[in-house]
Image (cartoon, rainbow, N blue to C red; front, side, top):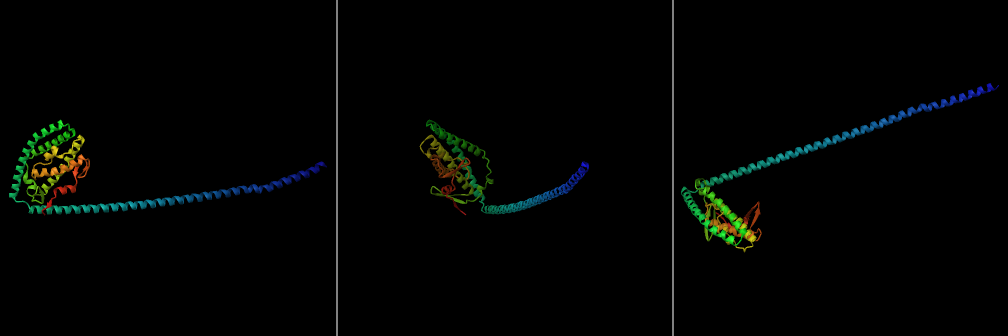
Length: 315
């Protein structure tokens, strides 16, 4: 009787278990389907992101290429402009050179037409030879005089002025050597002797005429005078000596830069001293009223130079 009752109960429990198991099966079966869907969504997102990155890289590359293209066009345009500018400059230089050549040729033709006569050339050459003989004699006389003045400077203990005078004398000695080497000078090849006068200047109440070569020498006289004067004034200031440009041997001599050619020694000495006086004042007072200093050299101002020479053109 007990056995028959237990069997239905076992059967019932078994049926319930089977039912429960059957109900849970669909749930477990749905889980793989949701995971697959999630993976597909992730793959699509990744694919979309990758496509977006590729598009961005493509856009960046396109922008870089565009920038490079613009930069290349700019460089080409600049190179073209530079080349065009160089061609223009070259054309301008050629034009200026041609103009200078034409002017030079015209001047040569004019000089040829206005060339001094053979007789006048021989007169100038003869004057020049006499001038050189007199100048060499003067240089020999100056040697004795400078020795006396050097001894006086030593006695007065004017160290800076003595040093300046010795330097000036050395420059004179070098100049004298160059003059001695020109004893066989080619006068016929020097344009000074066949070029007519082009300037007039006034000195000591009288007028004198010279050509461009003589005028250049007188300009050099003023400039050399200014430079030597500046150094002499500087030396007296360093020695704490009273200002007196006439006391300097260089002022008294006034021959530095003169080789005996083109103008008389008196003319050269006069303009050398005009420059020396102004240079001495600037050097002694440590200023640059009449001149300037550049690259180790002193030179007189152009307006001062023009006022001293006061050339009048004859053409």
